[in-house]
Length: 146
Length: 147
Image (cartoon, rainbow over all chains, first blue to last red; front, side, top):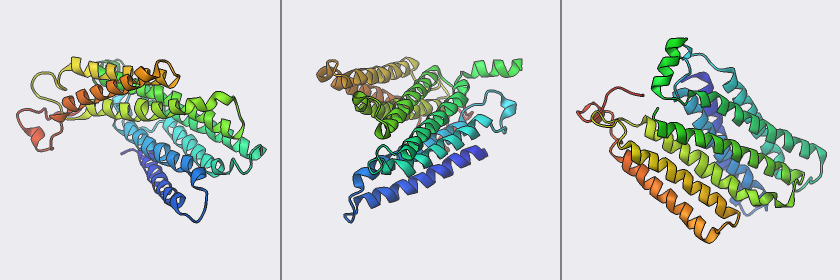
């Protein structure tokens, strides 16, 4: 399993545990933050956990463009990991506070930056995995040519 | 990788990109309102992320990676697999149209119905390929992995 896959899966497990803890806290009757936390823990589970595990495993299991680059770690996947997870951290730190600080420039900037980081992280993952989706015959031919 | 998996996974990546951009815009809209109609995109975001991305990616990958048959077509009937991919994406298309009130009373159940048929075809294709590692060494399965 390449290091980047381990990073994605470990980060996924971190968000999984955090998401479940928040979902538990949101159900407690001692506060009224349940509605504010709902989009936060849903995205922790769906992007932070499930999507990151899919990303990590596909980077590991999907055929490489060139067989001799089997162990080489792509810079695109590292950038994707860093952008996606920094975007998620920024998002989860700012999203619950939007109603309390509506119009505040710091919150607005934080939300915009987190949104862009997540989008870029996902687009970089797509850029990495897209060329790997090809029939075995095409892959062998390209491997032979290079 | 079979063409059905290639197309299902490619489409799932396209839907992931669209769902992420819509999700990003909705997040920004919460803090800095963009347009009053933005929230109409929320169900599109859900459907693309869950069905278009996650479910479709898993179906395409499973169809590719599960143990193959030794005799006949390695992954079962390829025409049924093609039909599975077409019905799934046709269902998603109808569902997305229904969100925008285009014949939604007809298109929403039609879309879900196509999903149901596609998933049943997927189950039928994959069922006999769900075997233990020991059984893979038997006469009906190919020991070689990957295509």
